[in-house]
Image 1: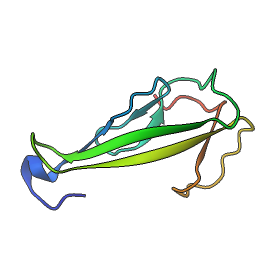
Image 2: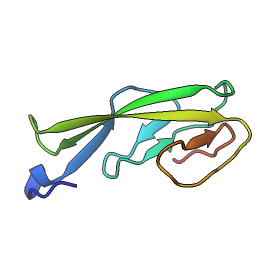
Image 3: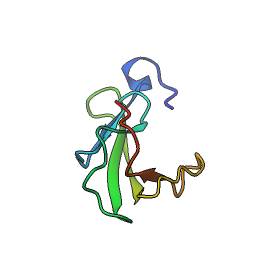
Length: 94
């Protein structure tokens, strides 16, 4: 969150490293599946780079790397941020 008001108080998220299977909600920063994860290999890890910045040009930015492990067994696990997996059979978040 950003305590500033106006455009500087809005945080905008974007996927810096483009990936055909995932996208980021620009307002919430949530990582979403764009399409069925066909073609990804068992145990494959995917790294996504997400940038968060204030709403105006030249604002402060921060980058985070999100590691996603593809789990072909469909294990859903918990909602804990560390060690999450995405099943290859997961439905699209679109």
